[in-house]
Image (tube, rainbow, N blue to C red; front, top):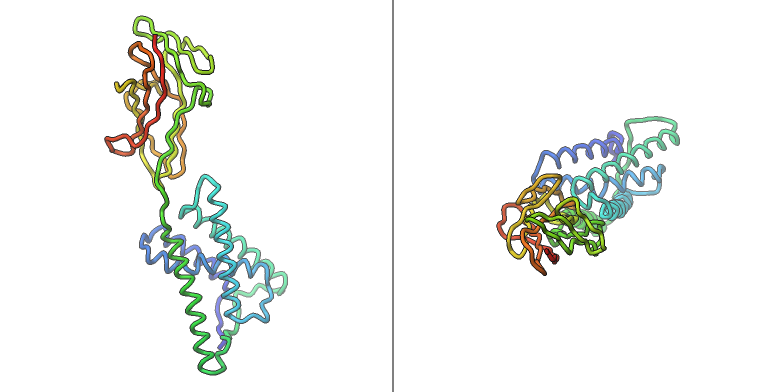
Length: 304
């Protein structure tokens, strides 16, 4: 059987654009799985094979499909592996755009090579579909059908696993560092006069007699697998105290909105209200509208 169709590389590029549009405007998971099957597990490998192997003689359609699917799995795995070590992470949008970019680049290379080798720029191609064993016995035809069904069944299962990945642990990194970014430079000694802080001594020996508050670096990293909104409160021996941030005084720091994997790290000032030794300074992290702290960190100070 002979089929006459538009250049398959151009068709793949068009379908890739339609895939992006469907992901953007069609939230249905079923639609994404159906459209994502060829996008993830056929298009990247086929365009790469077309860029590397311009001449296709000697290969039947089953061999071409197997080669394209195998190379697609390798390409998409490598893209996901690389994204895992970037600030974007393995998320839908970065993976979609990177895979599309790969398809477009390899498509361009394939088209250029075809033009140079074939000395023509045809938009119409003709190829022959030859199923192995189709001209033989009924048993051979049955085996061919089962082979095709097994390939597409495996690809469908893998596509569903990619489209609906199991979400790992959800948590938030919440930490404090000393004034110089080290764990040994927290404020340890405050000197108070007339209810005002006149001197702060840090663990690394630094003495500050200007600011009137002790400084720490507060850090929050969103690992909740979604956008989160945080707020922070501070207590000393269980009593709420104000927070100095960017020249303003507030009793609650926030809201701080972070995307998955995004980090917020800023200097804040802490001022105790009364003298005493071994006072516990505790920083409390709240997620969203929750009234119970999700996490906390603390250090100890002396005020004299």
